[in-house]
Image 1 (cartoon, rainbow, N blue to C red):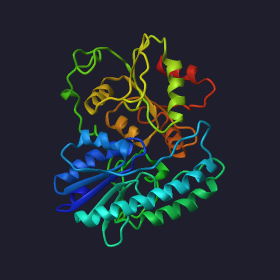
Image 2 (cartoon, rainbow, N blue to C red; image 1 turned 180 degrees about the horizontal axis):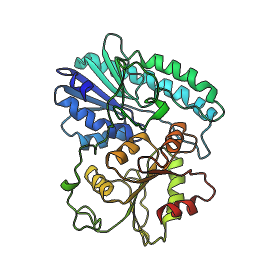
Image 3 (cartoon, rainbow, N blue to C red; image 1 turned 135 degrees about the vertical axis):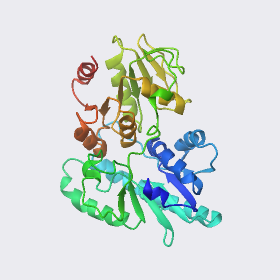
Length: 354
């Protein structure tokens, strides 16, 4: 990764966004690479804090209050997003001031942030990781997309580099969000897929037998469900998937993506529930699964592609980025997409699995 190789002998502050674990997870391989030639300090929100402590135990991590946005039970629309803007602006100002104090006290001379747009400082080398240069607008407001993208691109251009986690050449995942756009290459750089599993070798995994029985688990399964994202939509989809999978002649490992403090769900005849998995458990589960069911979050898509797995991807309703990615990637890279609001969701999901 040449752009990372060029950053050396620096005191770096790495700051992944704390909106789910996707941004933190995809930052891990990049932070590890930065650590080989630099002194790295991490700033992150409360959700990512415990995860990064386990993944990067030798690094100092400072916790910051982060975005507190709750998804509505109804479908997200343009006015929902408008309501989020004051919260986002407030948090950007807060994180800018909080991190500025750290920069001054720790002698930081380079910032590498993941989707933290407030971490831009005059006179300091600042890079940002994002796969969205031209964010998608909600239905009915597509006419604002090019104007919004132009404004957004101009702001991003103030960073030293915009690091796009997508294939460096050829076919791509992000499409018109970034990779299909005519962007100045000296500023916007495709750095390849970011995934904790990019370097994983199948032969290094220790299975008990050839039928997906793992050393980590004492049961067999063929389908892995990875829940993620913000409430209330996480729970809405969880209930729909359970209804579709319960009673099938397929064994399922269902990872709910919630903290261990949340109540657990009793296992059914064919579904084994876990609130969370450790990094090694998740690695083993992903490798063992014949099929993955997950949200269409970009970081999750990168993990699935890195592992060369098949997946059914279900975008969060109204989250325009996920809806675009699901539609774009349907029948590509081993993905099939399914709408959460599809009237025959249970029937259609079962058809995809059987």
